[in-house]
Every structure is written in C-alpha cells, then in structure tokens.
Length: 400
Image 1 (cartoon, rainbow, N blue to C red):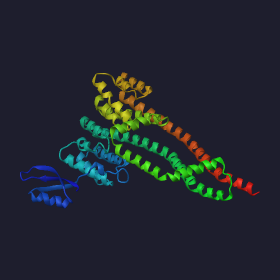
Image 2 (image 1 turned 45 degrees about the vertical axis):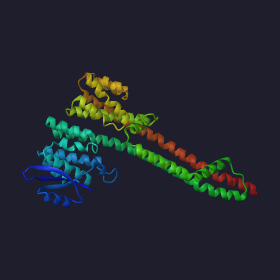
Image 3 (image 1 turned 180 degrees about the vertical axis):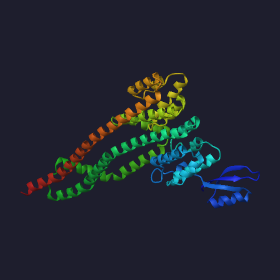
C-alpha cells in the first residue's frame, strides 16, 4: 500500500506533517478529516527503490537542466521556494518531478535546500548536497550551483565517452560468440551426417569441432544451470560491501582496465575535491565527501582513510600517500598545490590532465581492440570454412 505525506492543521492551530498508508489520496483525506483534522496537502511518498535503472530513471542531463534553470532564476532574484515552483512546471520526468515536489514541501516547512535534498544523496550524489550546503553558508548559492553544473557536465561527458568507446568492441564480441555458437552447434553437425554417408575420412580440424559441438549440445542443460546458478549467486551477493570491494579490487588486477579505472578515479576525486574546496567546504569534510565520488569501492575505501590522517595533523599529501592508490605524478602535483597555497587550482589541473590521459588511453585501447577482434572473427570464420570444405575435397578425391 503506498504512503502519502500529508500537511495538516490540528484543532489547536498547529501545522504538522504526517505520513499515512492508504489505497489512494482520497481515502487518506477522508481518514484525516474523520479525526477532525484540516488537510492542507497530500502528496504520494516517493521511495528511492521506485526509481528505475532504465526507462524512467533520472538522467544526468535532466538533473543538469533542472539545476541550470534553478540557477538562472536564483540569479534573477527569485527566492528558493518560488524558483522551485517555477522550475517544477517545466519538468517532464515524473520521478524528478516527485522529488522536486517533496523538496519544495520541505523548504516550505522551513528546511534549507541542502537539508531537503539530503535524503536523496543515493539518487544524486553527496557532492550535490555538499555544494548546496556550501552555497547556503557562503551566501552564494547560484555560484556554488554553477560550479556543480560545470563539474556534472564534465563527469557526464567522461562517462558517455567511456560507454561509446566500449560499445563497438562489445558488439563485435557478442556477434562473434553468436556466430561461433551457430556454426558449431547447428551447421557442423548437419554436414557431419552428410559426410558420413560418403564414408569419407574427416580432417582433424573437423573432427575436433564436431566433438566440441557434440559435447556442448549434450551438456547444454548443465551449462544453462551453471550460468543460472552464477547469476543467482551474483544477485545475492552483489549488494554486499565485501563482495563489491572484492570485485572492484579484482578489476584493478586486469591488465587493461587497471589504468582506465585508476585514471578515472584520480580525475573524479581531484575534480570533486577541488570543487568542494572552492565552494568553501573545509578540507577535512571535503576529503570525506570526495572519496564517495569514486565509483571503484576499493579505491574509495582507501581514500576515505585519508581523513583520519588529516585529523592527526598531517598534510593532504602525506595522508593520500599512505593510501597507496594515487599515482606519484598526481601526488607530486597535489604537494605543489599545498605548498603554493593553490590546492583547488592544482586539483583542477590534476583532473584535467588525467581526463585527457584517460581520453587518449580509451582511443588507443579501442584502436587496438578493433583489429584484434576483427582478426579473431576472421580466424574463426576461416576455421569454420576449412572444417566444412576440407571433407568435400576428400569426397571429390574418393569419387575420382
């Protein structure tokens, strides 16, 4: 049964907020009025779990557009509550609209914008709420939001670049796997029956592929059950912190993904930390929030330990040096930024450098993967053709 957030007026004139479970908003209203309460508003409660991964989820571009409109209205002199009401009219995504309405209700109730967005850190990010808090404390909320928008655009562009770069190789791998499966599972066994009628001796390559096809077809059910068990186990353990850290640590041991993950982590961490410091957040608080911006949980957990060293009076360079996850070049640049009292600016330089290096490495990796996969598909196709036509040559020789 869905929940509804109700703003009510009690008999003694107090305005309260109450959450009720009811089949509909109308039933909720009737139940409250039966208790002698006056209902101001009723809104359906939005749960984070209701936000889908695909389809109706809140896309980064939609959230960026919302913040751009919000900044424009704030700079024009509109108060926060009025700005939310105006932006709300132009939001099309139902999930984002529900969140904005809940935030608007919280702000109307007296909470700050950062406090109203705090329950949705899992949906957006801790960086966003930290930027809101910094803007509110410094009295420059539009400026803080503008810096966050620039940050979010760069992060979104980097993610899209990685996805688009890996799309073509992934499609080639899937296509080659399907091709091999069809040839080995369907085509070769049919030709084997045809060759057996002639009593021809099959070449070694054809015999090997036929045995492989027979083995796969005979154990197809067990292969299917094995993959189902793997999927089931993954679903059970995928949300456990220990499993996520183990999986992300394993990714760092792979030869090609290690450098991509590390460069991406350095760029994200540096850009987030620089943004928070520019917004006026203290270094100790910024280090803790910036660590959560790194997608790799193993690297993120290591970076979170830097806060303890900062509490003991050590510098940022010494604190990060103990984590042993950032490359020495990034550490040297951070040390220069600390010594020159320009840490936010140097962190931005670090992020730009590693973003550029990540882009170059992705392009290099894609340029290497494409010919390798094409050659692999060509070799597989050649093996299939030889395994089919070599017996035909033997048949022709026998008939002669």
